[in-house]
Length: 311
Image (tube, rainbow, N blue to C red; front, side, top):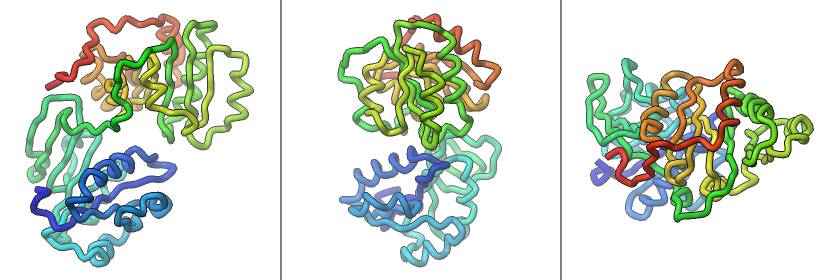
């Protein structure tokens, strides 16, 4: 499909609410394509700074026809969306304009109305093509998972530490609950390096946990996440792409999920012994998480950090 396109327009988000994971993935794609293809990055205005070497255009979800007009798009071009799944309905506004649509989706959207012509679904399974929603060609599988090069382990030494990250936005406020669970385990040979989400009241949290010698707190963006992940024996995460970053780093993870669907995606990974699928997490589960963490080291069991999984 790409060979036939005159222009490729990537639409993504980079806000306090959406985080920057989708944005960084798009930037990696453009870096690999822009020398051979006419690529444009459409993103929130504040994120354009620092990416001027690419063609950039401010994001405006309310006027899709203006985007098509200003970028002079036609049926020989392509609009590729990589946005949070909760914002998927934005695509509906771009239908009927005669421009082929592609969307990278973190969830499969079974039974939902589909608006894109081609869906890209990065999931820890064998590569598969299928027709979804009666019209959309979906490509799925582990081959479509995009991980930055710096996450791949080159045999770095592991230390008795646990990296804790719920992402930059932590939409369900898991971090305070995880901190409570960690504080309850008492003295530990493991150092828990907790990355606080953006906008946290750092001083309040520091005062609350300053007596816990096994807890270290870090502002978001203040440490090298990939380097620290590769040197950690364990990670506590909120699913998402971080699952696959843990696999690349060869770091056993405990995945906390927002809902059953997210837990089912974690299960596709943990069934290979690459992590622990904790399931849906909330305040009622603090004690259970604390008991799990107090039992470290966990036995990875049938862990297979193998390039061939799951293909």
